[in-house]
Length: 333
Image (cartoon, rainbow, N blue to C red):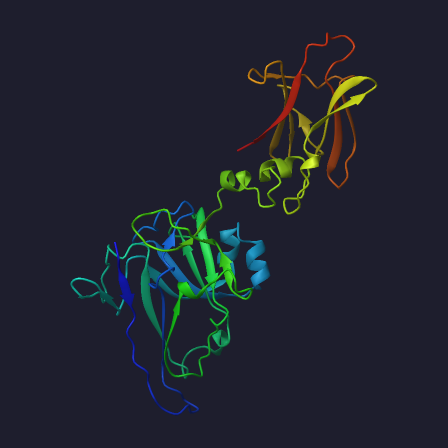
């Protein structure tokens, strides 16, 4: 579906004074390349909330707490709210041309436009000069959201001592601009409903985060956490490995310390379960008992709260019939 969304406004001409005229800001996702989608490219559903506001923390703090929407919500000051599919006081130019003031327009998939009027003489000066952000979520509140995106162009700074009108559109946010905030990603779009590139939100559910491999070293975040790796550095050499100790094969790795052995022989620490398994054919895996002193040895790890583990795979009392070993990690709900 081809569509063109146009924001119409007039300029209020005059000379700035001590009491400038009201300033009307239109904030939107209506230009090519600004439609909002979920992480998999599905258009954000009509009626979902999009917020405009500013944070009382730095862009660096926003990024470091991106996976904690509730924390961000406590530091967010909302200036306006809009709904996907709503074009308040705007005009959708299509066939036929329709006025969409105060109504939703379902054909405008994953887009919106809304206006906010600032009256400098009465508005709080607290917001003057603040860097503004558009915050989109897949739920009604930050606490219930599992996908969200935070976007800001470098020029989105409130100046209440201006007059006339202006427009901020999500199409302005670019990954190539180091001063822009793109906590999400740009296309390519996989939905046939919206053409061109889009802005995707990020899935911040624990399962999705655990499967992420931001440093591209082949180890997902869950494994990086379990084996005391650095998720920002390619250090896959720290994954479990087989080594010979006293002519016997041992499975060696680092794990979180301070845990306990469960009834099934697995090791539990900080909400993670470590299960050592062995196999003869890489298809059938069986738990391996690591509770015996002759089997398991530990020493302090390379960083605080970790320990280096060496598990003897073939104790003297066993026959040499173990061919493969692995450590399976589970997150305990």
